[in-house]
Length: 130
Image (tube, rainbow, N blue to C red; front, side, top):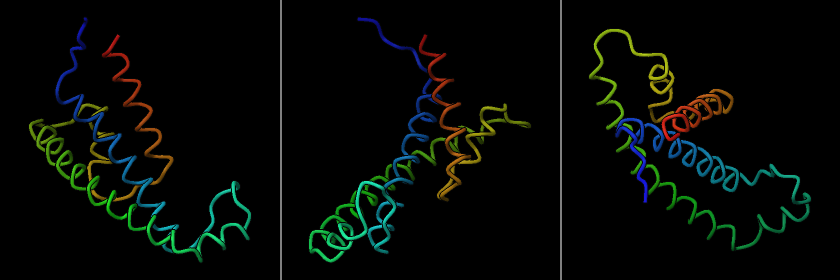
């Protein structure tokens, strides 16, 4: 069985990007549930009102909140590792690491910016894995 040889810093960066995406989606979903806002064409407004007024909503919100808490702890540790790696660079960071530095934080970022960095990171890792 062949093994991939991926530098640890590239693996950590890739996992950081995936983890941030996961945190952003979970957090936004939790907020939508909490505020009772529909953001889907899968449900009619009446169907969504039934859901909002149902006790199951509170249980689902609690699951989202718990999941987010665990995801965020993992993400926070990744941020520390990647920040430590980035701090080792003296002078100007390479372009691909400048991208990562933009999202290596606790802030939500615009979906378009994140999607671009996500796609570039996946493409870069794909090249390493070939």
